[in-house]
Image (cartoon, rainbow, N blue to C red; front, side):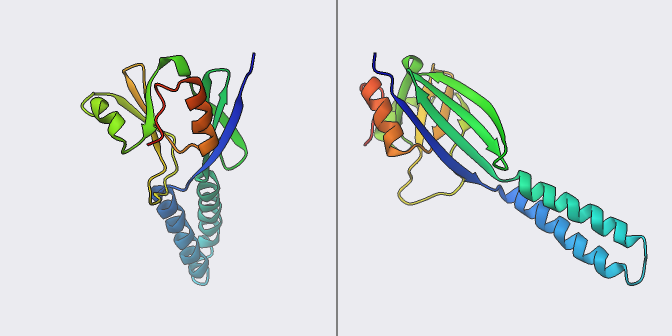
Length: 164
């Protein structure tokens, strides 16, 4: 039996919300440090906001790891390059279609009311390298796989995987 193993690590980057919260907390830190010249308790507030800003900034670094092994796709979320959590597991046999996100092969699925799971990079490149996977009629999964990952899926399910 030939088991194929492919893994793909995708940096999702930092969300705009997390960036703005961290920058706001760092700005408050600077304000409270300057306020310590007039009010002594402001130093405590500066320390608290500085630590909170650092925690928000560190925890906003997000990566996804896609793993293909034995007709199964596993998606893990990695936060701050230290904490890993399994987000989802998908069986290749239950995939309806796997194609680039703007592919004409997905036109039959566009009017469906499905739940969308986005495990792709937040950075949009030209051309768009994201893929959409329709799974069991009830969910749409958006991924940013490597060419090796797509090739491994195409070898197992050639009628469901499109490379356009």
